[in-house]
Length: 634
Picture 1 (cartoon, one colour):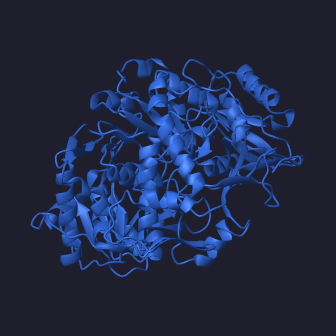
Picture 2 (cartoon, one colour):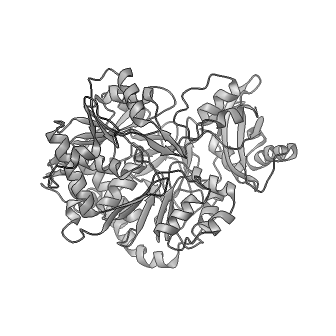
Picture 3 (cartoon, one colour):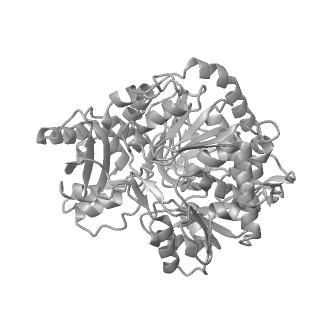
């Protein structure tokens, strides 16, 4: 990392008074409790779950493996459903709207019955048992949540694969998990087109070496051997099912990370610790109230969709909203239309989406009544200050706290944020660790530093930490525990005078320009800081003199037009904001960027375009045709 301290935008935004009044004392009590006795604090949080058998010991720590709530027994689905049924059978659990406008709702009782029916079918008709792996490859529909909960109810380990992955990617995950069953759908709606999920599953099985898995297909048009229609399979099953007692350390799910190179890593999360953090963090970070409608825009194929679309809200008896489609189809105001229509009160989305909204201007959200919103959140990557301010002003009307959350697939749940009603909000600065978590910024030698940007590390075990990589313990140790004697997150960060942490981004997203190390996020933030820019992506390109130079791709706001003068102005803006060393060698104004359907920018593809390499797999892109449009600009 560079020796130069990163300048943090210390502009402070005060929390809305109603949140301060509600949250200040409660949150301070949690911090005091955690600081006094951290393990007792986590005992207290775990006690908020329903346990079939209480644990004997809070933690056994044999680095890098933790066991939390040792010998305790519980069940995830029972905690998400059964415990709520005595008093709130008719409370709405899920509101779902399809891309085409169809709406379905499930009360907690209705959701419980469906889950129980599928659990019975998995056990009785497909002979799925505790420890068996079940792959879920579905659109963002209620049946995906039902499948997750049915697996957890019988002790099967679910592996949710995002419905945008190609057959080879799915085959890789099937090979690694050795799934006995695949739950899928005949197709998925995507921007007015059909994605043939069932056909992709068939291709993936043919490319894999797994024994013929049993397949359950939603809306199957015809039955084949080893193939069941989802609704026909469950329709005659009992709506009663006794949840299996699971050990606290029994695996709950495998979730594969999809790096740009190398074999996907099957991150393993276990039952007791994961559920403890999911319930605790959802309630605290989002200030959940009984009347809330909570919309987390993530797909269930990502960790955010696991923790803050499914398990966390349902553990807290919340009403969740699910939407099948994308933010800009069939029109650019679709998200705001849905918030108005369904009276969403908590909205949790990605900075990439926010910057896309910025590009379209303030007039679009102003058409809709967003007054039901009371809290906003961001997740997925660091948010630049301008996007934060736009979100706070134009979506939250300067009345909603913004929780800028940092966490990872591996952490299981939120680690850093500014808690509503407690921390002063700082645009672009994630914030402080949640109670019970201990982090440090380390230099290259592993020594804590407060004066320079460094490496973000979690220095004490926490309940929702991943328990390893499926079938690859050596890789788990090498990737996360070999650099330091603590968990290294892979992100760079800097801590300010208030002990708030600004996450800079992945340390492998660092450019070496003439011997100077420059973070891609720093350059991207400088570009988006310019009044004309809605979004930016930066990559390193080969340079004969400097070794590596900077190439920037920029999306303009709708009120600005491309010109050579503007390109020069943007390059100079970076030079003035950071350093002449950071001035982009190449700056391309593009109509859009190659993004996955979850909103992640595929910088690998931008690099391949610039260097003239063959473009790899593009099946996960939201708009594959953008590649040719960018090529035409290079």
